[in-house]
Image (cartoon, rainbow, N blue to C red; front, side, top):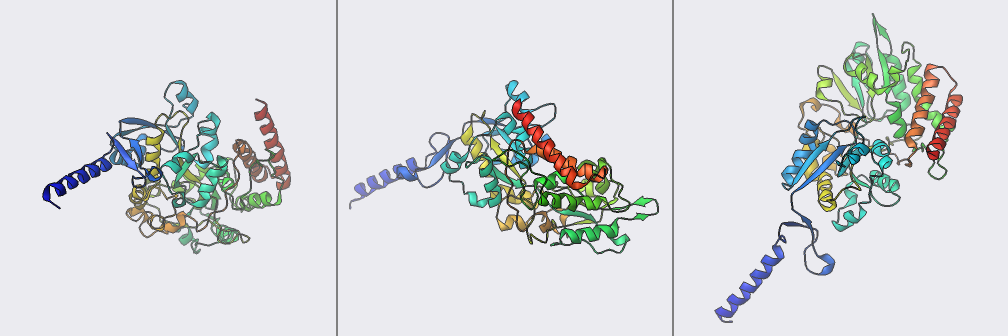
Length: 443
């Protein structure tokens, strides 16, 4: 072959290579190698775009959002400007829509789905985007994926990304004071009750309490996977042996001598004060909350795993993921999916998990085992207690779940505070829940 012909061939090949590598005028390529129509790369526009994130968790400040979510997004995608829209009881999603400030992405826990998304019909199926960009759903905890598919009746409204923790926090000083062994992993609820009895006592003028729990969150994440509302009949059935077992399992902790339960002690807010500020609560299970270093400063504390029922060995609570929803008002769906797929990636999550910002909803073992590695507050702590070894199957979702949950909370209060027979309290809660569902349907 002469040199001129060889050079021409090389020039043509080089031109083709440049064309293949071109970003198409400011667009990023995602997916398989380009070639045939079947495996042609998908592109995402790199035009500047502002994406409004609404805090459906109701737990973020703008500073926290930018540190944990906004700044990493800007670094990864310089064309994207994340904007934070806080949750307040005075600023609901409908208000933002009416004001022309509708969010593009809502991040919310599974428990907030009805209140901040479903209530305003903001959910949209992202399964076409999952398929278009070949996002591997097996990266995410399978029970959480099943939960999302159940909510959307087969599609996907969101990518579960972060996971709410579920440890028992405990104050070691209280156990040391009374010479009682610390809580440990793989305890049964009966083991936990026996420990609580030993540290529920008065020392001088100080009353110490053994164990308290956020009851509403516990019922939502119940290990028997009981439904708040039957999705087929849209009715509640709390007058049931397993609901009785779930409720009586908790009420007994409040019946210990010295507890003197009241409305406040049954609520998570007061329990938080008792554990972190008053330091009178030996063990607390908020069920969905990550305590801060500032709250735990000066306390000799640690964690143990969520307790088990004897009938369900090794089974923890249901997952309670924080997921990222692309809304119906979103005009930048592809860019938004690129962003939330990044948030549901090992690349984004590993440094955050190591800093103890959140536990992961992904299955990656390195992520699950790396929580808090680079944070002083978790040094020497039992961080594996953040997540159970196995999640319980997710309960059914209906738009009436929260109505029913509130009545179930009322049954506990009637039983513990008013000494009402539990069977009667649950039967009345069932009746009230079903009446509330009927009234909601009639609106």
